[in-house]
Image (cartoon, rainbow, N blue to C red):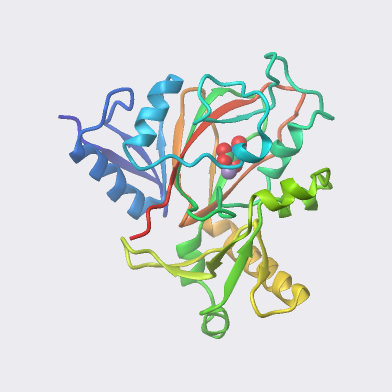
Length: 286
Ligand code: OGA
Ligand code: MN
């Protein structure tokens, strides 16, 4: 039986080989992936171009699926399965969307540091992103390790943030980008979620500084002071030494732990086609 082999790419990211993700995973293989994720938080599988159903089956073997914001948007879905998020600048008709198209603001929002679905409870655990078509230049995805971020905080700041809770709201990043055309009903559809700013991973016992662009308020603080603290913490957490930058190849599948990392897409020319597909699992409380 094939076993997972890991080659470190960064202190918290590794290239994984030895498992064919097209086939159903055995319990031992699932455990090896979960254990590797505890250690690394980002795994890169090269040359594994999965079909949409293979990608869904792989994700399902690691937990219940997260459906993200799709319940808010409705509308036609470009992919075969609603379980997959369409991370692309392509319209339902298969053409690259114009820069003014409503879809593009979602592409831009993905370029802000975030943890997928942190505005929901349950939030996302693993995201699995598969590269289908890539632009000629740009469009990397970067990851920052929030466990290393916690470890690197000065003691006085650790004491200050321990016990605080942050409110995460789905539309905060959209409002920041001027995407404000939502009805009151849509604004209410996804109620904010509240998460402790400092968390302990039940599997590894490591502490995590759980920040990201969806965090927009600190409970019990003024909006201004809370937001400033969140901006400072995010700046700390995303220093270059905590960041792995992934340069995509077609057929890559990159998997990350949303409870232990933030990520962001990087600039690419929206006139070029960029198509990735994401399956995401929900966190199952310990
Ligand atoms: C995502 C995401 C960034 C990118 O798929 O969740 O944020 O580079 N992607 O496309
Ligand atoms: Mn994302």
